Image 1: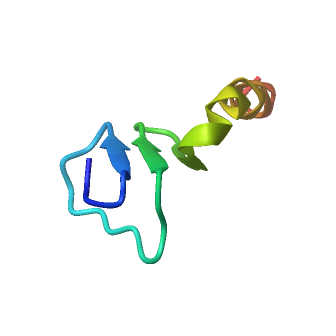
Image 2: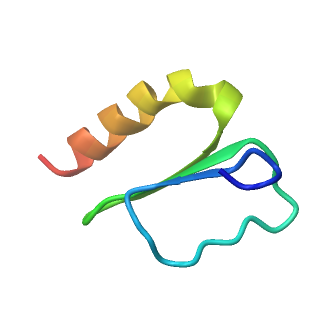
Length: 55
């Protein structure tokens, strides 16, 4: 977590959050997700969209 409360999950590559606070960056082999921490419940919606796209 950086000084602005931002968090990176899934990668060790350098990641910068320009002017952003309390955000989460999630990296997987087939997707990238960036969201504000208070919107964490939206992950289910995003996952459903991704799942439908990859059927």
